[in-house]
Length: 160
Image (cartoon, rainbow, N blue to C red; front, side, top):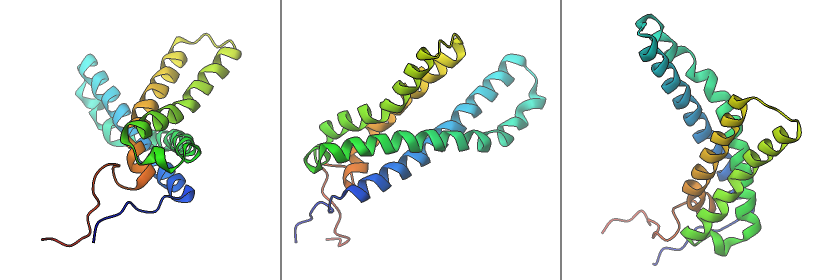
């Protein structure tokens, strides 16, 4: 029996998008703060503060998961609106998913511009979040759209 693509459904795409977004947002948030802490320890040369690597990443994972869930929701909504044919093509799903994931970051930048915020750190942070969201959305879009990477045959669980 030939393997078929799993059934495409808006609920499945949305749930996978929120789940992958929250998971990878948490991982990237914790990894980012760990790199910042280690970089600070190296710059200061004070090894007493290296224990902060064990304390702060879980707290950075929480906002990372929230931002990732929002980006994942936006990406999966874009994939749902584009339809199942886009989800079956890796290239098109990467374009649509990446663009959708970047929408919340772009909206945050526009809101900050409208509020006339002049903090360079805030602008750099918003731009970095939008950029990472676009990359992660593009990387995860085929898996979010179809459950497995689009264009690859699905395993039937039977070995020859």
